[in-house]
Amino acid sequence: MPVTDVEKLKTLRGPVLGIWANQDGWITPDKVAAFDKALTEAGVKHEFHAYDAAHAFANPSGGKYNPEAAKDAWDKTLKFLADNVKG
Image (cartoon, rainbow, N blue to C red; front, side):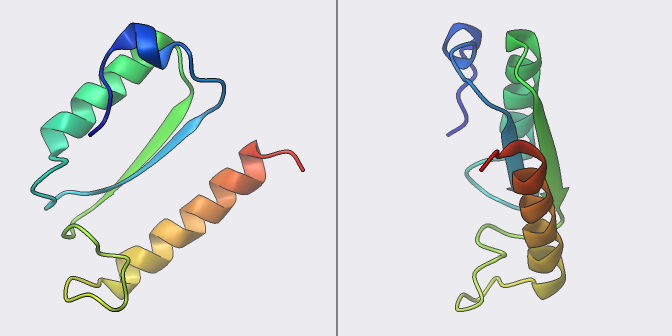
């Protein structure tokens, strides 16, 4: 589950990428919003992307696979890594 303790989040040393499924029964949009707020308060650079999809939407072997959302999420992940990881 996303951590919302601002003091713990202040210890992060890099940016955070969040890929969320709005229909996820565990990490609900309310929990994502609380995590977003806590990261902002902690001064942690982050970007979130949410999809109108179910949990595990990027798993092609599962019953909830959403190919359009999965491709977009993968493209955003690659861009985030290219922008933030120094090799």
